[in-house]
Length: 634
Image (tube, rainbow, N blue to C red):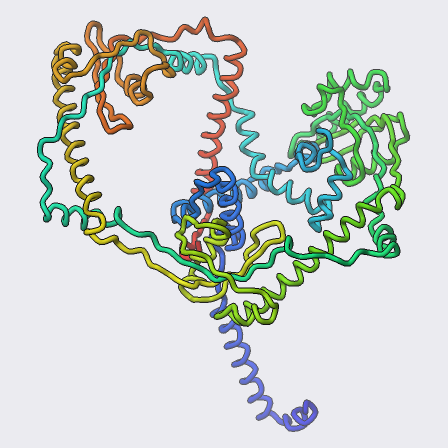
């Protein structure tokens, strides 16, 4: 065909026609390419996109954390609110701005910080100590290599680099401390009484008033939107694994996974770090190298710990004489690794350059790796075989369920017949969740999503954890609707009366406050309303026996002039009002504040000031960065 086309395209007329065609195809092809490009980001921070998947992952993470904290009180609908979604998106934007600033300033997560972050995670510890074998086994079960996990941990630490640097550089002066302590321990002489609730005389509520209040506050008398769903579930706990592996299969698994049962070579090492500043000048680099060479020349096994305590810039290890514990290959950076594993036991290295600066290493001991024999790990391999087989069957069935329900989005029956699984149905539940699997926030979110609720499609596979997943579709949908007035008539009437009583009480409290402010005696004013004045001398901000609302109002009132009290009114949780008077204000007795308390408070103030400074810095970054937010994709 190509040869025939070539034969026919002879002569300049054909070439001209071909050129026009090529131009038209090129022009309209490129135009079409640009015209059909669809943006999918939720936010664009400079040139970096925050994808819908990143955004949804962060929402799911926040939802899981909230559910774990709140337990039965968890309200999944909270995460559907636009303001909550915007808060989560703002957090992602802030993190991206900080990452971009890290690149500009040359800030990086150090190997020591990364090591400490991983070593302190309880999942990787045995008897309170980091265990490399457990670390590798857990990562292998999650199909992750140490490098992959370390990269994810490094990424999670990066947004905190600049805030920690700002907090560390925050200075709290003695004057700042004195002012704060004087306010914190300030003492006030106060009097207060609760205004008794008046007896409501106007208790008549007409039909017109009921109807008007009901219409104006209809949102207070709604039945929530509800759905029930049909679902197919796959639960690994229901699988029965009858087949037992043969000895040959177990031995083959042992050989294939032998690395799991081998403790890699480990080295017990101490180090002395000479820090090299970021963006250091050549003179600074030379000075750091000279200092490290001097330390290396002086260091011996006998004085190494003393030199580390004196000269090391690694605050995490200098207090323990530079001890880094047992390390294996891949835990530190390449140059550190190379130098460490080139040493002989007892040797002290020459200066080794890394991202943090120059290290002087002392190899204190070596622990060679030994493989456990097959007989010792046979039972573990057999147990793992059953777990793996159950996981394989679960993944296979879950995958088939996903395929079937995706290919037939308008029904679950096809998948149920093909996989011999029953279709089950829940009771009606609201956005706050229901009983059984309807209590899971992920299922509730899927049930009320646009794709499932409005479009009528099957959901995707919803992972409920522990090899348990479902696919759902809406069975019944009951829209939110106002309850009829006849049903809520008594509630409406009571609300009207409550509002009348509150208005009457506020009016009465305001009248009593006006009398106090005109100079009437507080005891006389209280007695006229049937109340009793309570007096507290030298009250502090955390005074026992005084309502928190009363204390807050008392410490918000201005300092009284000599011989003249200041008065205020505050509402109490029970709906009543209290009138508060402050007669005298005194500074706190700072002689009772210990040095330890001052030190702790100084750290807390530095933390607070640093957080404020960090937010101000982020706000400045936002002001000079082009940020686009696609609210329709949130």
